Amino acid sequence: MEEYLARIAPADEVAMRAAAERQGQLTKPPGALGVLEDLSIRVAGMTGVCPPVVPMPAVVTVFAADHGVHAQGVSPWPQEVTAGMLANFAAGGAAVNAFATNNRVDVRVVDVGVATPVEELDIVHAKVRPGTRDLSVEAALTNDEVRAAIAVGFDLADTLVKDGYHCLLTGDMGIANTTASAALIATFTGSTAEVVTGRGTGIDDATLAHKTAIVQSALALHAVPASDPLGALQAYGGLEHAALAGYILGGAANRVPVILDGVIAGAAALVAQALQPHAIEYCVAGHRSAEPGHAVALKTLGLTPLVDLDLRLGEGTGAVLAYPILACAVRALGEMATFESAGIDS
Image 1 (cartoon, rainbow, N blue to C red):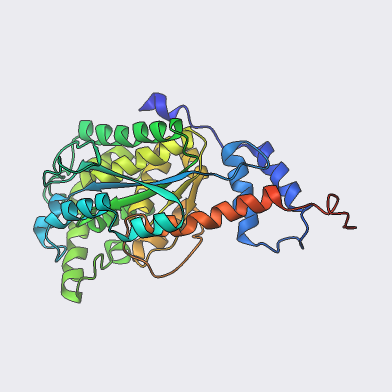
Image 2 (tube, one colour):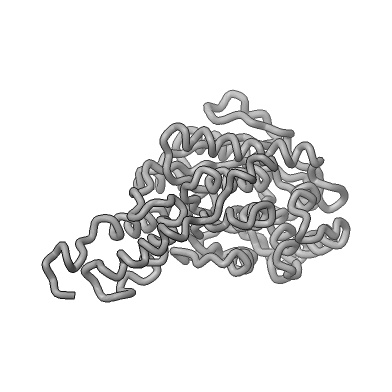
């Protein structure tokens, strides 16, 4: 892992300065495209080219895993729903499939830790173990399991880029994964369990109070400092968080944009940032989740979401919705006329 992290370089300052200068020459008032101008400059820095090529094709990777803390009643949904949704993804019947088809984004589904056997599905099989241990009573993972799950994300990012993908989008699936996310976000932001714990799949007030207490007690039990990202993953999981962290780092190592989805991706991005601070320079926040911990994570990451539609489904839906916005930002930088080429007196 250390050798892999060494591949990640800072965003290219020369390309970003050139992109900023080009933005000032395009046939529009300065700043008229708002956030899109800054976004295009950031993509130039990620890729090291000005103007950057439109990052296509794109792929959203849904990492799926289960969580031992489900036994504590933090979600009303049975754990078997994770495996059922993997079958739905494979059949093309989920929301992320519909969004991806509309936006010409390919979908990959990865079993990195689903408790139910899913060997019959036509997906990527990279199971590290069948779900985590219960984070409220013991460490969710061992150090070796954490590293193995991170490597799943590393290796898949490398493979996808070698296969010709120029933009990586994050997705996730796992009943009870917002509980692990809350613990991770609290660890890296210094926030309390009350601030970062949300309703997940729509739990009632009593279950939310119970879930918050579980997160609070787990934070006290493990007491992992923010300076120990591997220790945080070991304490709280999940396997999809670890794989997503590796996937984010893999995108950065290959100098391609990574569009983050919601609160699960936000938690994983905090881990990636702690492992390699430059990794976040390659990340774009696709949307702001309705989960309260996501806004806290984005603030710490220094990322501004492209859309805010009160989403809390996961799967990668918010990242896929944001992808055309990123593509438009890059296309405008490269394809708009300058005042000089258009024969307009600037």
